[in-house]
Length: 66
Image (tube, rainbow, N blue to C red; front, side, top):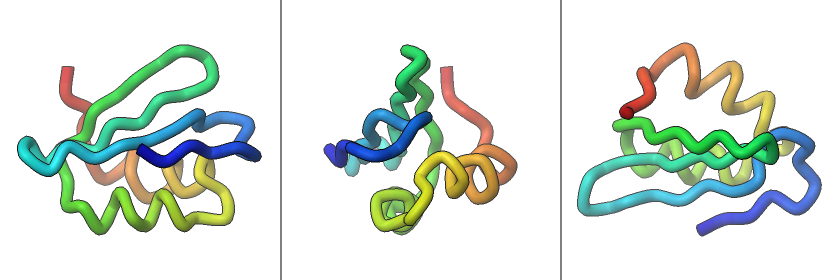
């Protein structure tokens, strides 16, 4: 699990290796899962702006899993 101390939108993210799911949790309480490669998780963890990275690179590319 990776916590974002300075992000105003993303609280933390995690990756489920078994299922291949990226889990993204927001400060507003929303939690979403996305089927994607672990590289997406690693890119989000290293992004200067996690919220911006999520909005431009993950949300438009992957559908969230309910």
